[in-house]
Amino acid sequence: MRASDKAPGECRPPRLSPVEPAAWSRLLRRPRSHRRPESWSTGTFGRVQLVQLKTAKRFFALKVMSIPEVIRLKQEQHVHNEKSVLKEVNHPFLVKLFWTHHDERFLYMLMEFVPGGELFSYLRNCGRFSNSAGLFYSAEIVCALEYLHSKEIVYRDLKPENILLDKDGHVKLTDFGFAKKLVDNRDQAPGPHKKRDKEKPWGEMLPLVAAGERPDQDQNSPPRTWTLCGTPEYLAPEVIQSKGHGRAVDWWALGILIFEMLSGFPPFFDDNPFGIYQKILAGRIDFPRHLDFNVKDLIRKLLVVDRTKRLGNMKNGADDVKRHRWFRTLDWDAVPQRKLKPPIQPKVCGEGDTSNFEPYPDNDWTTAPAVSAKELELFKNF
Image (tube, rainbow, N blue to C red; front, side, top):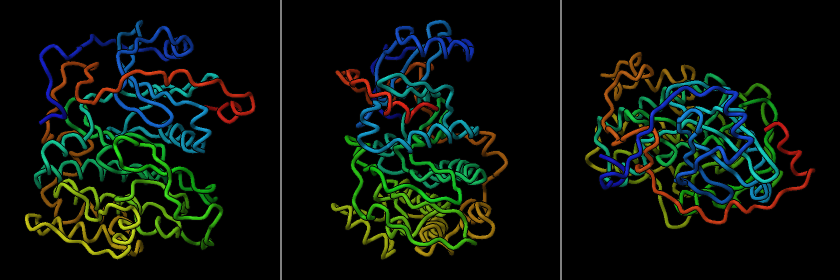
């Protein structure tokens, strides 16, 4: 299976060679040193481009964000969060960040290019995954979430659109704009909220929580955060109710993801986002008949409205999820070593092949105005 049909000759397999960090710094400060074949992801305040460092002949993903738009949408903290989280992590199922930079108009993040495309595209093309395919992807994602949580990081944006496949078919979580390091202080006022709409991946937040409204936090409770983040179909009940949230939201999202991978649609959906929220809070799950008994049991235990009783968020953490009988045939030691055979082998001709992504035309988005010195100060450490 693959994300899109390709005509012969579309692939661009480059020869790869090591890149020295000093070269990244020098070339990032000289934009003409980048080749820019095309963009394959776009949003309200930026896009992701395939770039090649001429001196190294190696391809990377360059995330370019318009500073004026980041400020207008009050996304300053989210872009800083993404940088700080990606600098801290190192895991086979998480996308790698190599370098960051900014000028008077843009923020730049030089990242690992993952050529297999979005899991969303494969799911859309085939309708739904088999039980074994869903188990494979779920296992790799469980390992990624377990690693993030061990570092007190909540991902907060798990969905098929944010799961990439590498050239071998293993997962890479991407887009850490909503990721949050759990600390004992509280979040700032709620910021813009991403909708799932593929045409508007960085849509406006739905006004469910009043700015500045914060419930008291028990000093003995685990660190939590209060910002409304995520995709409507994947939001946990505690996020909707503004109760403060932590690792449990990722395990809820995993339950939604497993259901969607095996069914072809999420368990809670409606034409109106507020209808989605009502169904989430009600907690009623209607399973398709073809679903395996064990996976239905796992989904039920992940989609428990009371987060204190949610699988993954209790005393044994991720181990409770890994010990569930749906995973009984799995060798968990082999999962992070990438020893399991992926169910989908992406068709990739080389590291620079972007044909598994939908291309976007390069328009006049690069004409963003320069910001003031005061505004630029917000990104001095980026």
